[in-house]
Length: 429
Image (tube, rainbow, N blue to C red; front, top):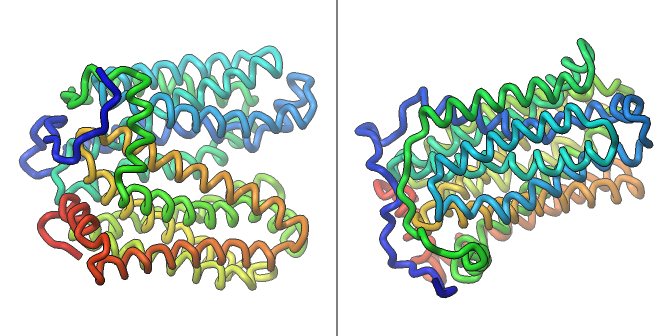
């Protein structure tokens, strides 16, 4: 097939009829959420284990630290190279295949005799773990438009909790046994998930079967050029995640130094505070289903900026630190879920490619924020980190304000309104 642009008017016969309630069964959604959480958790196992890995394999701390970078690189490659395949092959088969591969590569990592084998296993595990990002648009396709935000939010909460809990669980298992036990356990759980998903995931027809792989990847890039809403939402979400990642990275530096002086285990446990922010997802998703996606995004970007004001005195106050971290997690979920609600409605027949483009931009934003935080901390410590994070949040708020102004003036407003209308046709907000 030739490399032709996607037609906005193309019908979207890519889903089986949704259930009568307009939402997949709760048991199926729970399975999908747990599966996605376990899938991504393997990318975070190594963070509290680097010292143990370094001693056991007899490698330098520098090489051990590359494990984290290798995981990030592998996940980015998977988003670009594997997630778009969900638009041209049976999504259930693709999901089960990627989950099975993740189980296999976790086993390779667990049995790694040397540092290079460990790095290879980490990259391949992260690459295959993007099966979680195939499940999310599949969940969106199973839900009616009026239930889509809540459905996506529920499954995405699994991914977010998987990332938050993985570090704590990893450290606990390693303390009780060793670092290899962590990866063996993850491998077995992923194999179980692959069997369950094969048994219970429905089959969905693809709308673009026959598109060759190079053309498939090219069309993913073209989507960013063709869809103004996708470009704006990808940039807005990337800026918000960048601001959030500044906090996430610099928090370790802050808590390790006086007046806190916490141990690595205590710092890992503090990450569980973010679970409170994730708990706001149902409310955010409900508002998105009622057509309030634009308002939710604006509130989220404003809350992210306000969160940095709350964190400014956190250099010496645990109370302000907790309040600020909770606010920023709630802000991140607001922007992410509302943006997904909008972009998933753009091209139903290309939902996996839309997700690939959106999430790739999103994680590039996060990686950029982490890199900037490390550099800024070296020069200005906590106050300058807060200034950096707040600046990124303000830029995302201004981008949202520009989007809103365009809607009010009619410049690009119809395009946005149609996207939100497809996301929640019962009420535009």
